Amino acid sequence: MRDPLFISELPIDADFQYSDGVLDIVGSDEQMRLNGWHQPEAFWKAPRQDWRSFSPVFSVVRPSGSTTRSSDTSSRQKMVAAFDAFRSDLPAEIARTLEPFSGRQWNLLVLIHRKPEALELAQSNPALAWCMANCDEFRSIYLQSAADWAKWHVGNKQIEILEWLGFPATDSTVKVLRKLTPSCIDPASMRMLANTLGNDERAAKMLGHLSRINAGALRLCCYRRLTDLISPSLVNEAANDPHEEEDSPRADLLLDTLRLWDTLDLSGSRPVFGSLQRIQTVHDELLTEYQRQLSTQREETRRRRRRQFPLPPIPGNDDIVPLCGKSELEKESKEQNNCVGSYYKQILSTRDLFVYKVLRPQRATLALLCSDGTWRRGELKASGNQTVRPDTKSAVDSWLKKHLRAW
Image (cartoon, rainbow, N blue to C red):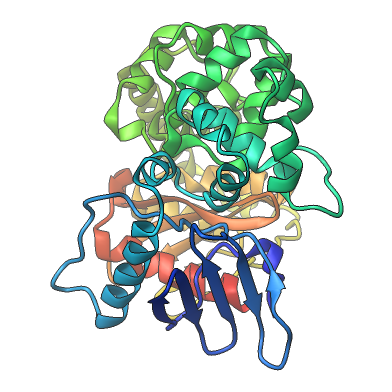
């Protein structure tokens, strides 16, 4: 049975009904009930148990104008219709304010209902309002909900709210949060941002000089392993790249490059990168050298004392197979012309990364990453680090969702 405090996904094969301001979500082993704007409350129950209050992590306000496709199942069409009806119950201005956030909209919805003046903050500084409404992600709370705690701080100055949340209480922090695009706002990213602004003056200055901050720019500046390798021009390039709005291809490629550098044990100082093209060039050069070394390894290297390899965090199947050892990683690296063989040391030392080979619907390599105790999809690439087809991505996400829910 799931703990309702941590529900981030809707029930599988659920039925959706909306009537008189109430959205009912009925799954085979759990139910959810979301009351609309008249009195926003959310409840959850398992079979033969009483209803319990909870805060949905999944999005409850869909973007206006989004449509279903003719290929969508009747179940999905029914779900979309129910959530659209739920949205229509909200004041239009509030719905528009909530819709850009990719998750954890509920606490902000409740906060605005209880303290209407919170809407002004949500419009002038969306990231700060979101963090305040989800204050339980940044500080300990007790007895009351996050929205109940947050409502006492709505009238405070933004600097005072930052201090309460654990961010550096400065005007520059206020300005940085105003620049964040909603798609990059999530608990882990905001905690990394707070730490970066408080402890990395160079990265904080680069963020302060940007006109907008998307997911790519944020992660380049907040990944501590990368801050000495990035330049303001690279961060600015990412901030203006539409491909970096929700993902961080530059940071991912730079992390890959750094892993290759460490695996090859190269001497000399690492370069500072000013563009995506420069990262790609260095990455490809290192990958070529790495592949050359793999092809020339002698038999004695395979007889080295085998270190204990962790068990796969999620079981594989006929289509998605875990790679459980150095030789399997290196074989995958050769077959797919990528650098996953260099992930071996990180898998052993940090236990926050695991690699699978995907056989169907398309041959690909998948990396799972562990953040805040939850495994999620990292890089998913076809041969030569090419982008996979949408059906491959969908198949992997369905497999991952199924097993995470089973836990």
